[in-house]
Amino acid sequence: MAIHYADIIEYLLGPVERVWGRGIIAEPLRYPPDGSDAIVPDGEDSIIASMRTRSDVDVQLAYLPSGPGTHFSERTVHGTAGSMSIPPDRTDGDVVVTLGDRVLSGPELVEAVGDHLRLSEATVAVLGADGTGGKGASWSVVDSGYLAVEIDDFADAVLSGRPPEVDGMGGIRALAVVLAILESGVSGREVTVDEVLDGTLHAYQDSIDATLAASSR
Image (cartoon, rainbow, N blue to C red; front, side, top):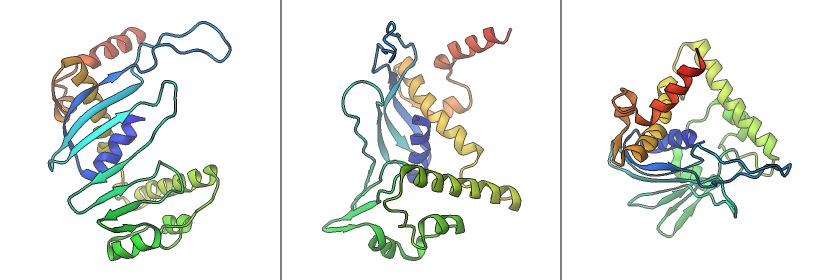
């Protein structure tokens, strides 16, 4: 899941250049619902990291989906002129922009963005001309609508020969950001994403590669 968040970070703020963080096991014992013996996980279920983008934007990522208690979700972008709050994925929540005393969302935010807003025909079909529709729909309807927009973009890219909105390099970079965080935890130092992309740093990956090699024999 952290790969999706890394992709969103790069979509909003540009390429991540360097990271400092680690993966952790937040829930050291897992109890099956059938009451059988507890399972001891050996793979990280959470990530905590500080990042710096190429354009010198600082990013904090804390993804801890496991463990007991109430799960908390917050996604915000802070700038010199204000802040932006982004709703959870695949929901009918609003993007909220705060500019001093002004709080903009829905049609007011669309009006403020003006001509910079460009929606595909599929997006308009799902969310309306200004992208604010779909309120009150069930999760399955909201989810299928967003998936339809993604599939439409991919199909149009294939038919027209253009790159999709998220191409293969975008996927590789998102994976590399997460692996850089895990490599940082192993090495105990700041790690650049390029070190992972070009294979310079691979201590965390080595055990995975060894297991894959053994299973293919």
